[in-house]
Length: 126
Image (cartoon, rainbow, N blue to C red; front, side, top):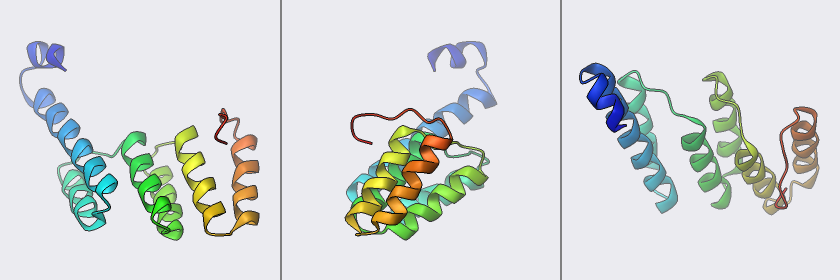
């Protein structure tokens, strides 16, 4: 980011700083379970023309899934894909674990097979 500030000291550098701050803020709210704060930060970020990245979405999805809000986590995955962000292994694992914890084993298995069909690499946690 320092390189961006030196080469492009105007709007791009400001955009990068805002983006980094917004993503960090959303992740912090999500991990603390403050979903109202995370949602407000997400809206503010979008209002400034910034898009959440895969890390931001995955953090929100994981936090929602761990708190038992699996339907909201699944909705966030849809939002993520609509924004052009592809779920990564962490995203998939969070959703599969959340579905399993919600006793939705059939849905977890479907998601696992979808992950396999999309050639997403799996980990020992998957």
